[in-house]
Length: 278
Image (cartoon, rainbow, N blue to C red; front, side):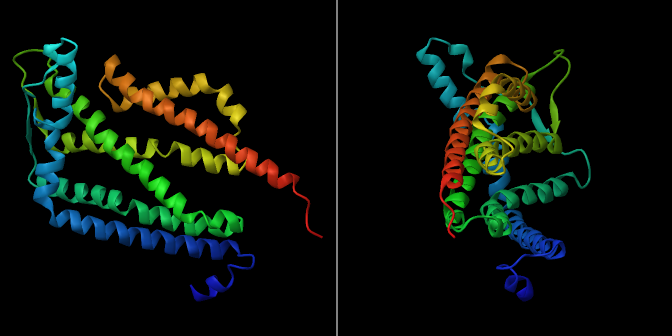
């Protein structure tokens, strides 16, 4: 590692980049492991106060929707019961769910550090002024990710749990949901939402690389809407209201990405027009 650091000011070989990438992955894995160990110890809080809470009719989202619906005269939108139980049908089911849930929480907790490691990896290829923006990049990326996590947990998850948990094809069939299936639904909604909220950051770097332009994003806005609708259909229940609730913030993020792309393009054009020092 010391030899590689000495080469940072000079051109690094392909093998040097692989070595740096290897240590980036190792440090990120260690951070996830530490976060996972912490989550594993806090089993009671993680499962009782986070994982299983969207199954409770007193969950914040259900109470909020009930309050809003009452103001518009829709009393039937208040959720008083979610008719299903969560069960474990395999011998090691609960232990396996505990392990994988801890790893997921560990990844979420370690995300800012992972972003920092990614920044360190790409830093040598950036201009000195851009390298000074490390703090802003880490803060904004982490903030967007955690906002997405909160959105997924308080919006996507309860909508999905309420819809699928109460859906029946016949009164004789009861919904006894397996623990792994329930957690998979929650994990998919939360993590996919967190990663989707990173769209502005992705567009920033794609614009820096010259792969995306504001004109391109505007031209294909309609196609982006179709893709967002498809993603919303995949991570939400198959009802129009849920898909609209998820689509709106996604399209807002897309529009923000267009302005980010404009800003980056403007800065790049200004650099290209500056006189070169002799």
